[in-house]
Length: 582
Image 1 (spheres, helix red, strand yellow):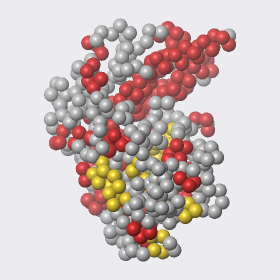
Image 2 (cartoon, one colour; image 1 turned 45 degrees about the vertical axis):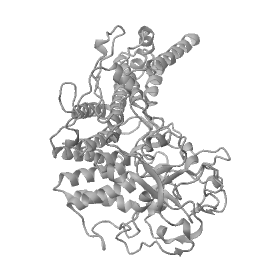
Image 3 (cartoon, helix red, strand yellow; image 1 turned 60 degrees about the horizontal axis):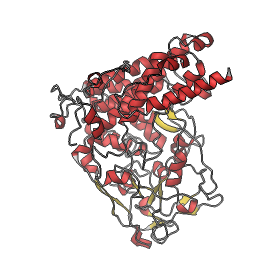
Image 4 (cartoon, rainbow, N blue to C red; image 1 turned 60 degrees about the vertical axis):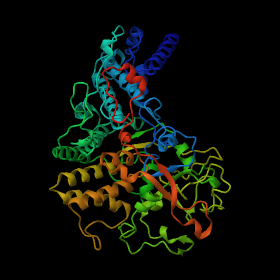
């Protein structure tokens, strides 16, 4: 019996590897189906197959080789030219050599989810032990994951190929493998339908602690909220810039008519998550807003988190962000534009606050960094800050990123901040590379703070209920420890001003969480935020350090709104249309 079970697991592993490593997203399924159908009569192999589908959920902790969503926008500079992100920033990419290529990866996940959904029914062992309800839940999880993978391709590549529940037969002809991309709105409707079906079956909360990280009703509704917010945005809602982007039958991929009701639909989707009453903005028991904001990511399984990835490489994020003198690699650096976006403690931007100054020092700290809002101190490591973490086990050290400083350029080789700052957000003080200690925690993919901002933005764009939009904007500010709009010194905001305030808040609240790249594109402001990015003068010591200089340059072309489909896919998919500009 043990030998038979072992054989099944080996067969399952072989199937998963062969099934998910296909070179083209329309490749045919393997011919060992009978063995796999036998596997789907057992509980444990079926659950392992489902767990493997979760492995396609991205681990975005690697923002230099794995994902470009913070290093290819006005958030961070990555110090090392050898990493893949550098190729994007200098414009060294094409359809033939496109970095960060995920199209195939997510279609492998889609295929695996579809296969699972089509074969789990009738699982004899699950039926005998748990009944049909567990099978229904597992199918709903796979349906959610399939929708998630479609969304991930949609946001990176634009319109996708919708395959549905059909499995391509092993003897399919070449003609049968030719499928066109659907329009953006058709893709949205399909994914929304899948998420609605999944949400109707998925549990509201995980059944046990072991189930944290699995799909829930909240995760499905929250992903729907993000999707519909994107769909309502100017990039996809009546964007005349894409008038010539047509499918092979001549129909536009992007609707050429602005539909304001899309904003209403996005607002309703976000409110559905809020109305579950299962999630709350995380607040540290001490009431300290800095600890509250850091705790969102450093306190595992807190009740702000809606969907997370349990297995991840956040230890690598910790190492790359941490000071060299504390055992880190000292190279994930916020750009000056990101630093300047943080408010002052009076809740005002630096351009409007009497508290802001770029002259002089207070207790050894340059006044640019004094009187800033709590999220700044929870997110950015700046010169003169007190740092305790990594290899530092007793007294904090004073950060010195000047040219000759402890962690400066002079003695750093490649491991130095190019902007004079380091990212502190989601960096665990418990991780210590020198002692080979890493802090394990979930990677947060969706959280309630985003949903509040989704709701506020959709309401403000739709119009007619600015007070409700400002309420949820203010809930974010209250947790952040800064004055709310409508309080003394900060008048209420409405209309276009409210929309801009929500965008400003979103930039700060969701910083370094893989949102900004997509936000500036869907708002159609990317051209204004790319190009020269700045930092402090890391070639200077003393006062000379505190001078803005160009630290990075991100090449921008209109083609970069979406990644290209690979030339390999285009050569084989005769009904595929390439993205504009490629």
